[in-house]
Length: 477
Ligand code: BGP
Image (cartoon, rainbow, N blue to C red; front, side, top):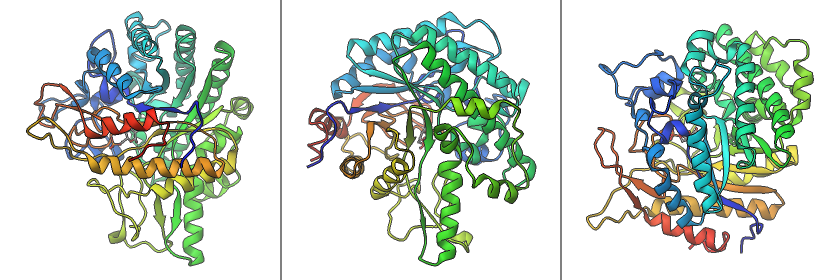
């Protein structure tokens, strides 16, 4: 029997750019996400480089329409309430509030939209969990300032955050700063607003600098949040993937350890402990560069420690000292070698529920502050049957094993505040721009060729998750 705490926050998660659509409505400015095309080439582009322009003669842009959450949020929230959600993670589109990012006055229409969404959640007693920046900075900040490598972004983000805290202080008590902050190492365009080749000294310098500016911004924003909303909690948001050594060969173990330090802990150590870790020296000498740290930055970072750690978990990584390129197991962004003990999803993401228990224990041991799983799920192809049902047993299996692992970690003594499945309603994939990579309990009739009615349908997993929440994780059958 699994024992979840009575107040455990069950729910689901989406992001503005992947769900809202209405990319040019309500006074919103363009964002980085608005210039990312759909289609096969997208993943390579976001890891290499992207033109910061919309070119409809060459590409399609599924994010422009998303799943039209902007107009359909009432219907969608009613469906989440029907499943019994206690929490709903969403992001605010920075460019709905500051269309160019660098203005001093916010766009009232944008604020009003989120006011309405929060009011609707309140109707059903669903707690909002808000990400302030989820892969979509205002495009102007990328074009005019070069994204986060420019120190000026700290002040723009601070201003944006203060506007949000003051406006929503009575409605939002759980906040997250930057989505998957460590993704900067793999796809800086989405999280930092510029393309960079991390195999070059210059590319790494830009990434480390962009991250440093985000650390300072995050620390300032944490302090503003505490000052403006005394009963709020603010967390960092990180991709976690335990790194396994391929064998007991000490060289493999060392490689895994070093990857683990950089990938899982480079950012979290700064945001949670309030200081850079000792292993950074190795990273900086390996890449021949380091971030420039202005006097006073380290004091700011020390004062802005987060209250909890939120993270996405999709897969583990396996590392080996001597890599053969043919052995590579490839998720969206996590390289490494194939783990012979694991199966992968249709998109090549290795499925590893035990890894979730491992990482929960590792992270909690390291920091001893509450954790929050804010993304976990299976991207899969779903088929609507003639009678309108969608029998996504594979998704139920995925969630069952991961929730079991979560329950076991709680029994191990790990403190977890909640669990929001990723893409609780189908939406546009961040990595591939596809609609066909579906994560939801709710199916959205919208397809990669642009066709579809946007009609919402309950999948079999919808009824399953409802039972899970109702029984507080006791009934996973
Ligand atoms: C995370 C992102 C999400 C989401 C998810 C699934 O990296 O925070 O925005 O999309 O991964 O990834 P994908 O959409 O590429 O399947």
